[in-house]
Amino acid sequence: MSKILIIDDDEQFNLMLKSALAIKGYEVDTASNGKEAMALYQSNVYDVIITDIIMPNVDGYEVILNLRRMGMADRIIAVSGGGRTAADDYLITAKHFNVAATFNKPVDLQALRAKVEEIIQSH
Image (cartoon, rainbow, N blue to C red; front, side, top):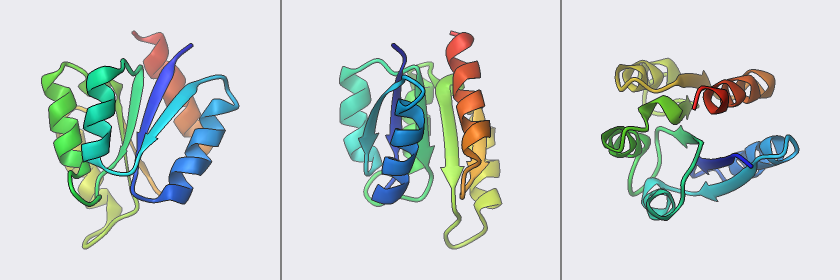
């Protein structure tokens, strides 16, 4: 069974995405910030990591850089609803870190699930 980690400080987003992926048979863990996520991905193996960019404590960029150092950039999907600037600004920066994909919020669930499947099949 493929394992996915969702990192977002929006609890409703985590639950919605977890449900949308679990119904397809994936095992899904969630974290509300990058600090929580680091503890999880240092003790678990994830096929895909979906991370928000703007979060308290440790943000998505730090998560991406950390995972990139671990050779896992091609398993990361970055999502953003924006913040001080438009979501696209944050996601363009994330693309420079060679993440597998980026999505604006609200997320197109069908497209996201297709990307998750594509990442899993490529590993």
